[in-house]
Image (cartoon, rainbow, N blue to C red; front, side, top):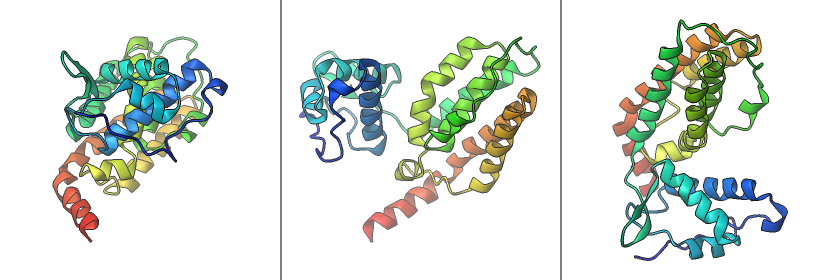
Length: 235
């Protein structure tokens, strides 16, 4: 099995020596994650470290670190004979992530708020690509405000995965139509952001739980959306 050749023009990164090592690792991670979630790799396909490093014009170190992070997210796994290969995953794995965040939020409900909680920084929302990423950032802040630092750290670790997957183009490629019910979910997120900016942890908490329920319900559009996506690509 050969590693997939990545198109050069839009895949090359800025000159590696101009990017701090930790940021370079994160950029490589995001590029590979996006390619996986787009379906550019097939399940079981081997990822060759040397090939990826050459295509992205970086050293093998940030690629190796990115692959370790991807394994932590269960997007790849190490096969005893083939090396690093794409792991089986589906839209339901992303829905489960949302459900886990919801469970963490519900578990924190009713607990005493932590003293000296940090003010919410709305600029963090501006750099997200999807409602999944915005939800994760808000949930992390709410959990931190409740003193649930470990739960908040887990949500933070999953933010990029949720942010990339719930981009409308990528979600639809997997049969999830994010335009369904978008107005309602957007209102929930907007209300949560407003409450967070005003220091209203409890109000933001309620809005996020409502939002999560609506996002999870999107899986009911899986079949119809996949058919629409199939028709679009065939015409």
